[in-house]
Image (cartoon, rainbow, N blue to C red; front, side, top):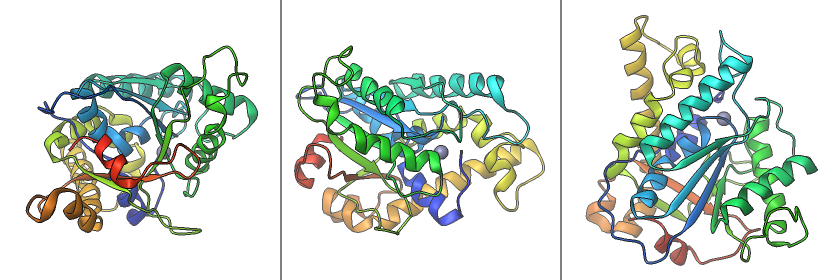
Length: 297
Ligand SMILES: [Zn+2]
């Protein structure tokens, strides 16, 4: 569900990368990455670009939607919407070459309680994740905030043998990362790694297009809330997609210095779409440079 002011949407959406038939160098060691979003579109917006680039290199990526998205629409709700949205993110996963799960928790009702902490921990342990990505706990939406809290709350226990002993612990503590957003209080997002996703941008846009309940329906959140929406269906779809592309482009512009530092002046100054991540202080700690080397270039 998206219900934020345009600038913050734009910043959140900088995570919205797209995948192409990337010709990446083979991976030296297979990484296992898990990305948590609050709703069936958030992991996709945060990390579709890096996910499909990692997958093309032979790494394993799973997206998890912490809720089933069953209220974020103006004319549909409940089980039928949850089923529709699950099918949409599965199609996204197929496009990106990753796997995806949707937790059967009602949209708008994610609570950082012990039961859900266990559920998150089991997902991370089942995946044997090296890297865990998700929202920061500073966000307009309670489900987004609570994903951030829940991830923070799992950071130490995923490696504890006797916490949810029905699943094997991770081999040490994973690296935890937070995806970009535009919120500044109590502290703004800090871009520790910013990745050029231009080579896979089309795949990210295909993924967005595969979620019409979020990004195309007249009664979708974007269809209802974006200003100056065209009346015709083709015009509306194109307008929403162009709006999303604009958000992503604004993110690359915001993190231009980091892109130039990573890719050099020539390439870094030309990157159009990027995804950015911050090292979370509660997971395994790595230097930003070492983290950058783990991401596709
Ligand atoms: Zn959301």
